[in-house]
Length: 366
Figure 1 (cartoon, rainbow, N blue to C red):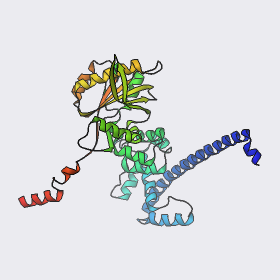
Figure 2 (tube, one colour; figure 1 turned 135 degrees about the horizontal axis):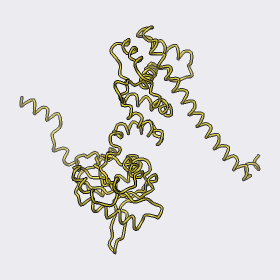
Figure 3 (cartoon, one colour; figure 1 turned 120 degrees about the horizontal axis):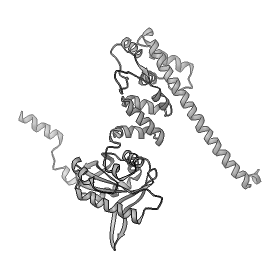
């Protein structure tokens, strides 16, 4: 037996076998999850069809009976049964309402059940939503009522393998509303296919909620904090960004220049220059970024790489001024705002009135 374990062919074969077993386990797990979600959908439908017949305590009694009959199974709590019921309604949309998913409860249960007859089963969402775990689905049911928005988050979850916590974070940060909202000149500077993909890659604003900065701070301090939190930073940037360097050095005509942050986007197949400005947007910022993009294209980009794109992040901007600044530049770039949490220095906190003191002062003035 020991000799067999030392045999190189056996060890290689064993590695392949273990890999196959793990793959099979994953497939089996996905199959079980798929059937479970289909079952929850059917269960939700059955509950809605019967609950007016058997009264207000129907779910409590059903929960007790199912737990008693199937003690080894999870998912028969009253709360989960209610989610099954909502799940069925979540996949029915009203033609009159358009994109709004109808999941709100009517005051009268009978009216709610009658209304289901006028709803249309949404097969697109059903085929997509079955591919994500039940915990994700419950979070979507509670947070998202817009059909297009729901489809967006389901597809992003599938493509990026988001955990439930990451999905919750992306919903909380309003990713759907922010994606593709940056002002860019991509239409004029990139081929159509790459332009569309690049536009969807950018956001406005970028939300760095994981940063807590105490004044005074400068742009280099923000850079440092972003790199210290690189995992969260990459999550906010989106899938495909690979970090290359901070204060990336370039030598142009004997002079030294330093790019704030340099990334490579795997899907776009191009370098991405990110410049941070802890101020309101100024037109000259776009000109400087245009220079950096030219330098990277000449000194860093390979023959197989696509044109380098730039992202200028400012604390504030006026859209018309941004559009004017980008109009005649020949390098692809987008301009967005960014925000994070600012806290007061310790030496100032004691000098400011508390909420209680302000309220007391207002009461005295009445």
